[in-house]
Image 1 (cartoon, one colour):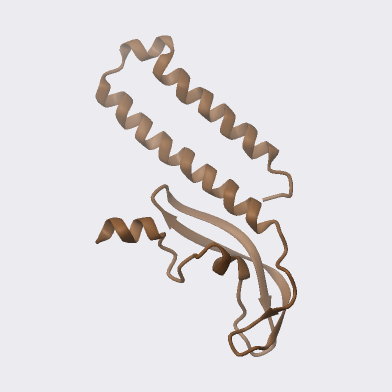
Image 2 (spheres, rainbow, N blue to C red):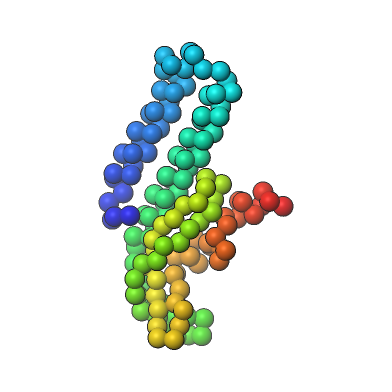
Length: 131
């Protein structure tokens, strides 16, 4: 995501207005409750995924504060950005975040810890619902 989230915000606002039109507009008169509920559920999940991408992208745009250290105390330097999936109730959301590495180290992404992202990618809410 670019440093300017405005295009995505405009897209979200447009999608929200479309959702309102779907339930209040003239075409809504011809739909059954089942059809509207199913359509809303799918579109709201997609809307939630867009909001999550905006949240993750906004947070990931900020470069990690230096110094970043590995588990063994090795100083890691900012290297590149890595994609990560987050499996949420809205579906899989991929975003890029800063990665820090050093020779001989796998590296780490400080934002993962800040956001409490689990290593396996499944959101806490999904794990709660699975129990």
